Image: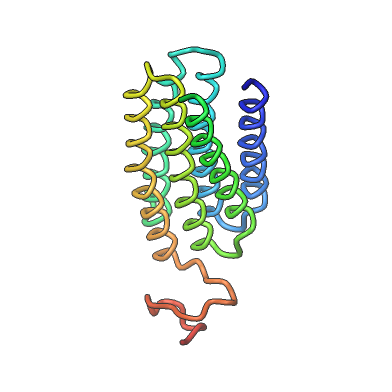
Length: 85
Length: 108
């Protein structure tokens, strides 16, 4: 069972690495924003999985707050790209 | 019960990897928004619910997190796509139809 959870974490890590490559390479600002959104949603799932592996209940609260902050931040970035501050 | 939750989490992790690969490989911002939103929403939903199945004490809280991701992720990506249309970021070269009539170079 431990090996399978380690494989899950490594697969999500490969996905985060691809998102960071797109964040470096992306031509416009919207590309970087959507790459950040994808990486954040993957990180929420990774935090819940890590909380199951280490048997810590607190990681669920951390994951919920992280997803709320990501939602508000991406809405703000989209409004800024649309019509400016 | 643990085997079933492990299978559900495995399917979700595969969907997460496919979503990140789509963000890396797609040629256009609109394709990237679509790939990065659909695959990631389903993947994170399945992963979080799978953890809730594996550990039945945590089921309701993981269900709350998964429902929040399921609601909030399409809203934010829809805002980002509308912003990039109004900003006028161009489509890629292989586009065959443009229903917004904003980009004059690509006719049907």
